[in-house]
Length: 113
Image (cartoon, rainbow, N blue to C red):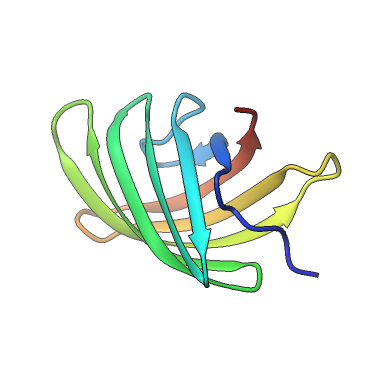
């Protein structure tokens, strides 16, 4: 069974290993016809954008962001979408910087409006 659409859903990180995203970073997702995109900001991230595709419960994403120190970075991410017992969505991410060394994992869960 495929998880529901990400469209108009908001997410925040509950776990991040090695990146600039934190619990203060809020992602606002959109999804249409197999395309996904989002804006995000908060914590060490001043502004970020991501774009990618969805096949069933797997996202393939590229992202670019500006941190609070004025540095830009970009990378790629593979994300698995799942449904939590309470009906919210969870994103398990494996990411890698392309503009600098580093890689890691993140867990992002849906938050209220």
